[in-house]
Image (cartoon, rainbow, N blue to C red; front, side, top):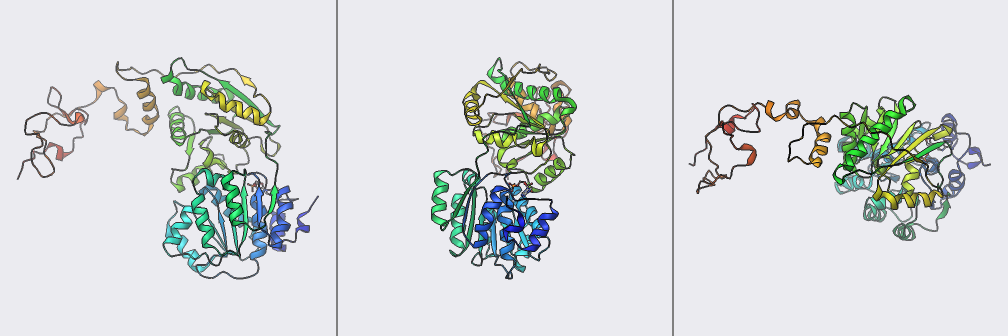
Length: 478
Ligand code: AMP
C-alpha cells in the first residue's frame, strides 16, 4: 500500500495531513497525486467521500509552494458548483496549507464583494469560487485570470445539472492554455466528455469504482403509502414523516430529510416546525449566511432535523448522522446512494427510511436496479393526523395544506377564526381613482378590490383594526 511519504508532497503538507490524522492515501489520492506532481492534467471520475478534494488540494499546495502571488492575478482557481462545496474546499485548503504561507480567497454568492475584492487586490495563491460569482468579479474588472497555473473543476456533473457548463467553458477560455487542469466528475455524460476533450490535454484518467452498494452499516426501509384522495397525498406524506420520526424515538439523534424540490424543502420544514420539531431547511435559494449558520448548528448537534435538497446537501461532510429520510424518492438512482451515504459513516450504524407513493415506482425500479437488491419494505406507520380545523365549506384541502405550511410565518391574528377578527369601525368614503386622480369608474360600477370592500356594517373587511390612514382619506380629482 502507498504511504503519504512516498508521494513526494511538500513536507509541510505531509505534516498537516499527519496532524489531520490521515494514515494512508485513499485510492484516488494514491493514483492522482503522482501524475499531478508531474504536471499532468487529471480526469478524476470519482464521487464525494473518496477523498478527492485532498487528491487535488495536496499537489496544488505542493506546486504553489514555489512562487509568489501577484495583485489581482490568482495563481490557481478551484471551481465548485455550490457555495457549500466551495466553502468545504476552502476548509480543506486551510487544513492542508496551515504550515505554508499560501493565501486563498473564497468567492461565493451571498457574501459582500468588498472583502473579497480586498483579498484579490492583495494577490492570492488559490481562488476558490462558484462559476457565477467568479464571472461577476471578472466582469467588474477586479480580476485577471491570465496568471492561473492550475485550474480545478470539481463536481462537473453537478455543474452540468445546474446549467453552469457555458460559464465553465468561458472561464477555461480566460485562463492560459498552458495551465494544468484537474477535472472531477462522478459520471461522464456526453457533454462532460466533450468538455474534457476540448480543455484537457492528454489527461491521466483515474476512475474510482462507482459506489453502487450502500454501506453495510446502513439499515434501509421503504414505506409505501397511498392517499385515499389525490388532494390529500402531500398531507399524508407529511403526517407519515412525522410518525416515522416519532417512532424512532431516542434512536434518532439527528437526521437529514431529503426532498426533490426546493419548494418542498420549505414546505416540509415549515410543517415540521409547526408541529414542534427542531427543524431547519437548506437549499440554494436561502441566503448564504443562513445556510452556513444552519449547517454549523447541525454539525454541532444543536439542530436535530435538516431538510435538504440534493444540490445543497451534496458533498456536505457531517460525520455523524443517525438517520436519513427520503421524503421523496430521488429521480436519479445515484442520488439515493449519496443521500443514504450521509448516515452510517465511518463504521457507525445508520438508518435510511424512504417514503414512496405509487407514482414513484419508476424511481424505485431504477434504485433497485442500481443496488441490485430489493429495498426492505416496512409497514407504514399509523399516522397521527394534525388536529382538524373547522373547514369552511368552500375551502379546498389544498388550501388547508398550503395554510398549514404558511401558518408559522403569519401573525397570530391571521390564524384566528374569521368571526373573531376585528373589523375597522368606520368606512372610508371612497371612490376609486386612477393614478392621475381621475375617477376610474365613471359609470359608478364597483371595481374596488375584493379585500377592500366594505361589509354591510360599513367596516373594511380584511384589514383588522389596523387600517392605514391613507385608506381612510378621501381622494378628489384636482
Ligand atoms: P472528499 O471525498 O474529498 O469529500 O473527502 C471525504 C472525507 O474524507 C473528508 O472528511 C476528508 O477529510 C476525509 N479524508 C480525505 N482523505 C483522507 C485520508 N487519506 N484518510 C482519511 N480521511 C481522509
